[in-house]
Length: 240
Image (cartoon, rainbow, N blue to C red; front, side, top):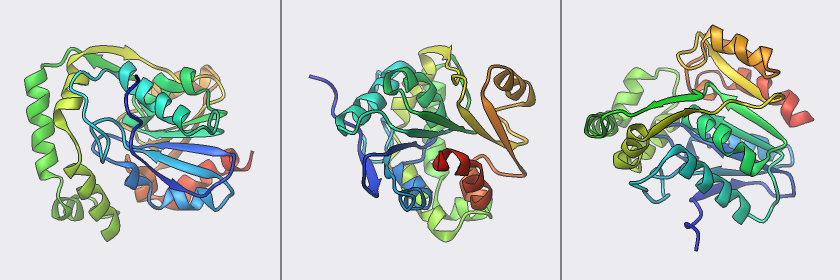
């Protein structure tokens, strides 16, 4: 018997499925503003809680490949076929790249995502870092350090931190690394400058047939800092 499907939120209905994957210490609720807007375009939108996030179960033996299988298995359990669009932010984008061959989305969109994991980190050190980050990620901290967040954004992300399981992702960091690259025809939306998709990587992606759209001055969570620019970058994908 396979693992239980990941917890997820849904907006809209129909046979055109869009999958949303959040970043580290986020949750499905991180897409609270994006999901309904896409659903209004006639899509069924499903946002997943990644393993050890939100209401999805922890997995203290997790690897990137195992997380990708959990994502793909959950999508398969929806009985909606392959998603027409799959969007992953940061960690969620890395998992989307790892799961794309299993899910076969019509179009994959990566939002300021790292595509390489070094692996081999000291488990206890990473665990301590994650535990400290979880404790500090309060509403008050987010309100002070993320001036572009709305009050609801701060509430959502503080709540997501409470559901984050540090041991799950310490297991991933201390496990094997790897590189999972977008396929040609994918879209990468990156903050400019970006700590995750630098200029050299952006040039490599473009040379490989991946479209890269820059959002100057955006924060890592692009739709929180510049919602209109983020949705404008998505528009060609949603209209196709």
